[in-house]
Image (cartoon, rainbow, N blue to C red; front, side, top):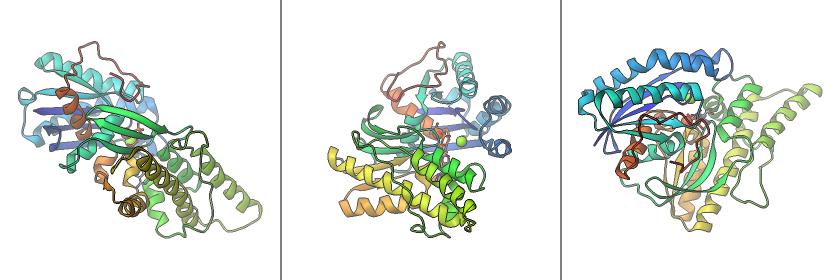
Length: 336
Ligand code: ATP
Ligand code: MG
Ligand code: FE
């Protein structure tokens, strides 16, 4: 089964051709980062307009790289939520147009289920059930993947997402957008025990997260340095902040795995490419005898191969969307 995947939920216009959910024939990503950098974050109206400019080129390149034409595609998988409504609409309208013109089945995909499915691409042996820590720009969830397309949320952030915290702290210490990769890099030059930032814990829900506290603590630390004329050390702040976030992510994931008796742990989303998180999760999983999987960086952040992978399993489960498919900006995991 050959699937054309289309992704346009945020600031990446992407298309990919994937066979049987796991074999990537092409994966084309046009990122708008340089455009949004000027404003310190994604400007929705600019994103929508750029998607319209790029989407046909990106799809043509994906087909060409895969050496396939539209007649050789078995189905079209497209992200229909969650995300920016104007951005999502570009991909959804495009996918519907192709589906109608070529009479091909259409499968709407949940963006975050796509992030999870990115793991199927490089780990041929990975199969549900497993525990997945989803850490992206807008989401932080602990999810049990019971089967392909079957998700049970066991924990979620109460405020900021992990990636959002990285981006906000990066901005505060002058690193620019997107901040995650920059904090990751700068952390290597800093002392992760230099400053003790708080670990967000929620007493009545042990698997829920909170990252607004650590973000505020970084801002307070910066103010305090300025007031007391103490030298600000960005590398130490980056390393100590990352340590706080990684500590919480690893601790809660391992506790959840123990509680739920899951022996396979999977990371997904942009923050899954964080080196500190990968190292520490590796150590912790080794200690417990758990298997750990995470995608290569290019499949951690937004791409369409992951949408095609998720779309394949949806397709096999019988999901078909008609031309009434619409963008759903606040689509919930597991919602069809
Ligand atoms: P969502 O998927 O929740 O809708 P999104 O698509 O914007 O949000 P992703 O593409 O999954 O998010 O990932 C982008 C996020 O990942 C950004 O917040 C970015 O800072 C963060 N990120 C990317 N690389 C790293 C890294 N090495 N360390 C930490 N964070 C990172
Ligand atoms: Mg992005
Ligand atoms: Fe994403």
